[in-house]
Structure formats: structure tokens, C-alpha cells
Amino acid sequence: MPLAIRNLLELDGLGLNLVAGERGLDRPIRWVHTSELQDPTPWLRGGELILTTGMGLRGSPSLQRAYIRRLVGADLAGLGFGLGFGFDEVPPPIVRAADREGFPVLEVPYPVPFIAISEAVSTHLADERVRDAQLSVEVHERLASLVADGAGPADVLDESVSLTGGWSVLFDVRGNAIAAADGAVSAPDPALVWRSLPPRLREREGPTSSTDVGPQGTQVAVAVSAGKEREGILVLGKRSRLDQRDRIVVHHAVTVLGLLLSSRRAVAAAERRVAGDVLAEALAGRVAGSDLERRLELVGFSPGGPVTAIVVEADGVRDAAALEDLAWSIDGALGLRARGVRTAVLSGRIASLVSADDAEALAASLLDDLDAAAADLSLEPRALRVGLGRPSETKAARDSYLSAIFALRAAPADRRIAGPRDLGTFSLLLGTQSAAVLEAYVTAVIGPLVERDRDRHSTLAASVKAFIEAGGRWEPGAEALGVHRHTLRYRVRQAEELLGRDLSRAEDRLEVWLALKAAEVLAE
Image 1 (cartoon, helix red, strand yellow):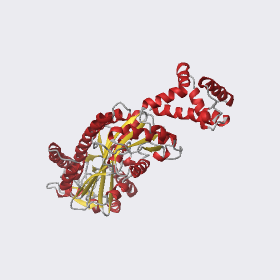
Image 2: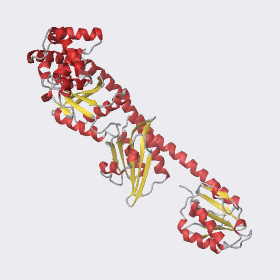
Image 3: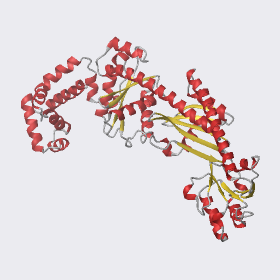
Image 4: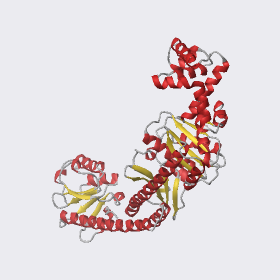
């Protein structure tokens, strides 16, 4: 433990005598410094025991009182006043001022050299560092051995509490309790502990620790990191103040937990990448039928299903790393509630395949979780929309994925959860099991239009789509495209000539509209 003024007075052979500041006897001594200056504080850092013979303090009582005020303001440990070099006793103004401030003043007898005090303090500090080093090694070995034996975060917390007493909780960066340990003091509700933490500590770029000392004891929270990645927050509490041993335990526990969590994250990330590749193949239509069913079984889905696709669109999120972070959060949130879940990033969207009894409730809970974590994920409020697909067998997982995408496309833009009820025309087209049938229909109805756009990089199909969506009205259609109405009229006339159709007729408009929608389905 640190050397305090009280301990210095108890050392044999020094003969020091306390004359003022009894309230400060427990002040720790960081170092010893000798100075005869009236103001030595510019050369001090705090925590020093200052030794002086008072050569610079001959003068008025106000000078001596000011001297004590400066030492107190610099947060020194205390004052050792050497007698016999101009003063036979410590000046009364210094004694009175120090007593008022609770600042310890020690009489140093004439036969006691200042170097003896410095050596005594230095020896104690050196011994303390050796003890701390030995303790640090012992704690590290105890905690590291747990990891070597395959222990998890809860085991590390249990060992930490057995070394310190009190209680401990480990949170992830979202505030979910990963593990907890009870010691001599029962742990409070983890939700209350999380809310008590400084908001800045929960931020990935925020401070790394905080300490709260109150009537109920001490609570210290430390960020658990591996490299530059913040993995969680360790909170340890006890009824008394933390001593040096406690701080050493916390330091090593944070290091060991960082390694454990980062290794778990690496394993989970590798597993998710493999499963994500399987899912991407499935949802892109490159694997289907019984082959797909076997692959999905390998990553946790029962053969035959049922499974449901959940697709999340994040407005404004285009960066690949940001999408991966969001996918990780979505995978974790769904994993807490679904029997099986796999997630992949596809075409700027996050797609999850889940096995759950109530997928609609699951989608609503997911959106609530993501909204709550929007700040941590660097998302604008209400920036996310969730598409819920139709349930399907595992071998037809792509059908569920497509229905989720087109539900989002068909639903009003302000509807944040879109489902099968929103599919509209797409419901009919997605019910067609053969892509060849859709391709034949698209070619027969709008084939010349598609070829013209492809060969000349024109936008006739988009112009026709905008015209039809505007109910055959020129002004709203042109506004949607951002062109003049005469430009839209010219493009539509070109399309009519190519297709041999009259888009003022409801029947022709319907057939072209269905073909455009079928082309969208084929494009996914």
C-alpha cells in the first residue's frame, strides 16, 4: 500500500513529530523534495513531501500563511520543517494555517538529516513497486491460466471477484450483459448499472474508464478493448474504496477479457463469413433445391424449413465497413430471439434468413433495437426500413428474399416495416415459379424497349414506368424524372412506336406495366 504521512511518523530512527494537520495523516507520499524557495510549487507535480529549514520563510506571518496556501493548492502530501537552522520551533502562523487546511506539518529534529527521510521514503516506494510487480504477476498468472483451461468471461469475473470482493458485470458495447459474478456484495440490476455509466464511456471513441465513489461504495468501469476495437465494458463494485490490489486485478481482467472477446468475435466473424457466403449463394439464386437445403443445414437450418427472409435497407449507408458493422448488429439482435439466423450483405442491403415462430414480431423487435442503437451505429434516426418475406422451405429461400425486397419496393416510403401484404402486383409475378416464363413475357411485351436502352444507353423504359406510375399524366411523370413534360412526351411516343402499343389505352398500359415489374423481379 502507498506510504502515508501516518506511516512515515511510525518509522523508527527518524523521530518526526506531527505539529499540525492531523486530518491529513492519510495523505499518500509520492516523492520527497527539498526546497528553500518561498514558492517551490512550479517545480512540483503533487503528492510530494516538501522538506525545508525555513530559510525563505523569515518574515511576516502573512508570508508564512501564504506559503502553506501554496503548498495546499499544489496538492502536496505534507511539510517537513527542519529545526535548528533559524527556527527552534515551527512558526505558529504556519501551524495555525496548516491546521485549518488539514495539511500535515512535521517537526524534523536537528540531528535528523533530510537525506535520511528521503532514503526511508525511497526504500518504501521501491519495496512497494516490487510488491506490486509480484502481485501483478500472480494475478496475471491466475487469470491467464483460466483462459488456457478454456474458461469464459464469467469464469474471469468470478476469479476477479474472489480476489477483490464485491461484484462485477461485463457488458457488450450495446449494454447487453455478457456475464456477471456475485461476491460478498450482491450485484445490482445490470440495467441499472449500465444506465449509471457516463454516456461518453459507452461511445466507441470515448474515455476508457470512470470511477464513482459514493455512500454505497466504489464502482469502477473500464472499457475492454482489443487493438483499436472496443469489445465491451467491465464494471466492478465493492463497499470500500479500491486499493492497489483491486486496481491490478481490474487491469489484468480487462486485458484477459479483451483477448477472450476479440477471439470470440474473430471466430464468430469467420463463421458468419462462411455462413454468409452460403446465404449469398442461396439468395442470389446460384444454389437452389436439395443442394441449397443441404448447405443451409450445415449452417444451422433444419431441412424443409420453414424460414423467412428479413431485409434491412439503411438510407445513406453505402460504406462497406459500415454495412458490415450494421450486419453484425442485426445478426446479434436476431440471434437473441430466433432459433436460427444467418446474415449477409447483398447489393447494399443486409439480408437475414431466420427460423422463428413469429417473424413479424421479430422484425418489429429488430427495428426497435436498431433505433435504440442508432447513435452507436452512426445512423440517422428512422433511417432504416425492414422488409419481411413470405415464409418458405429452405430449398426455396430465394423466394422469401425476393418477396421481402419487393415488399419494401411496393410499400409506401414512410412505412418502416413492409411485408407480404404490401406486395401488390409483385405477389402475382413472384408466384410464377419459372424464370423462363417471366423472361418470355418480358421479351414479348417490352423486348424492343429493353434492347434500345441497352444499345443506345437511353432511358425509355424508366420514362414509360414514370408515366404509368403517374396515372398517364405528363406533368407528375416528368416531375418524378426531373425532366420537362415535352421531353417525357417525346420519349413515350418513341416507346409506343417501338412496342406498337398505345399507352393511352388502359389494356396496353397494364401489359407494359406487368412486363416492367417482371423485369425488376428478374433483375434481382
